[in-house]
Image 1 (tube, rainbow, N blue to C red):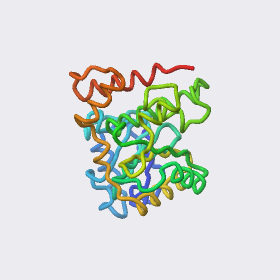
Image 2: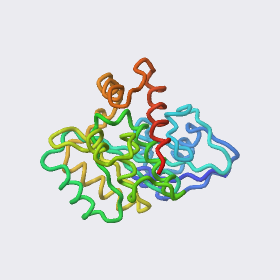
Image 3: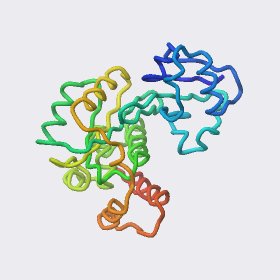
Length: 254
């Protein structure tokens, strides 16, 4: 049996948060066909507007629509509207939102958002330090795993994420390399086991800022910056370069 978890518009389309598919295996295409067949609003299940994750890994990073889910797997499906990307990592819901420009005092902004959404762990970083959404997702996985194993290098999970993104165990250096800057583009990373509160946070960001996830994508300027700061190999392709960044983040220990 495959467990299908539905978030956002996908949940609205089917009318349930969880659906079980009694089959030993099914491709993403077959799963979406199944859901369309039981949906009251199939228009909310257009593949181009969906993120489908198998055991927390975006199917787009696997075999796309042909990605196979097998007996015992959990498939999470979320509708993406007006920017922002939602993920599931085990029982933790996560949202990654690129913002074109952060005005005013970045520090005060983060403090305000954390005070307003106490059930959500919130970090905001410089978009130039993000080498694609998969970069942040990998860092978040490391953060949650370090917390689970009680081997964090920081005393708070939000700081842990920032340190690993910046590949340093020094908070001041992490702020310099990856901290959110005033009047610049940025990225919010929010995660919680309370998906409703997380959605309220995401909705607030989308109301208050110009959301643009394209600013998170890898580019030559970002690579050049990382090469200088971390002394990495510039000739690697985007995939290998990302893996190198994640490896550097993973080796940080207490």
